[in-house]
Image (tube, rainbow, N blue to C red; front, side, top):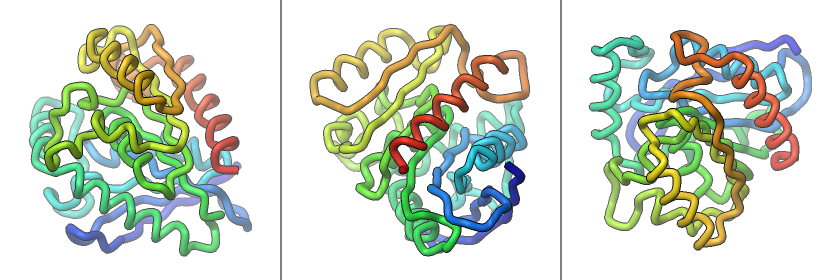
Length: 245
């Protein structure tokens, strides 16, 4: 399916946020996926991933996740300087501000004629965490979380007892969690902690561990696994066709 994309500016509780919208270039309305990026914001690999999802029949909205902390349009490099800046931003922005960003995106897409009003969440790295976090919003009908970081460690700033690990009990939609077994950011101990907790609270989730490193979806760099990435796009397509129907 041929796609189109455009940048939009959304009012949020913490200031104006830019987002890039990818969607099928045909008439009609489609379910929406909020696609949360890594700490580097809307890089070329993130844009390509969003475009692939749009080509599968979805409206895909990619927000600048740290819009309060950077000039509009900031894209960080996949280098030490970009990593340091992105991590500092990650530790500076509270989860509550991500929550209000998510609500602003939901209100935007539900007002668009090209969206059916059904909304899901997907993301990679910290974006996988933010997709999981978005599932707390009752307007999110499903979340597909790829190697989500910082859930088990509770290292993102938030109000007491408002961390995503603790709040997981409040998620009512279905969640998919995908981890690489060779991912040092979510070690086996952290994965076991989440798995047992999610079992105990009765979370409606699917769990998948694959032989891959962190960022195996990113089509730049030596960790990219193209065959596995294609498999994940296919699984995400099937998941969202079902949960956003």
